[in-house]
Image 1 (cartoon, rainbow, N blue to C red):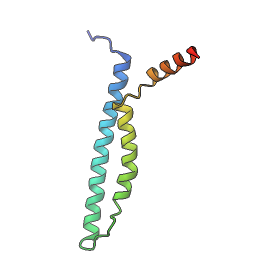
Image 2 (cartoon, helix red, strand yellow):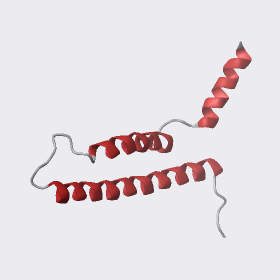
Image 3 (cartoon, rainbow, N blue to C red):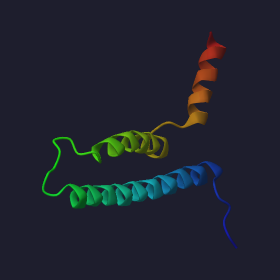
Image 4 (cartoon, rainbow, N blue to C red):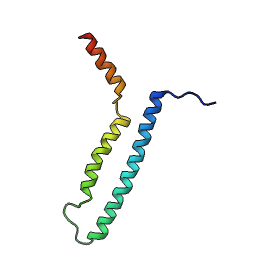
Length: 89
């Protein structure tokens, strides 16, 4: 028999698994973009290569995803603290 899952831990595990998939996709796609850049611009490389821009934009989103998966951004705990603060006022 399977033991019952803790709903909060299961939700956190799903977020972390989704982040790992997102990170893997980011690395594979950006490696492909850099290879495309190197093969199409060799030997005349630009001072600022174009793959930097998708990496930065997507990297910001990846960073936000990391903080929701691994950070202390537990929405339920934050809402509970805010509720308790409002009750005290």
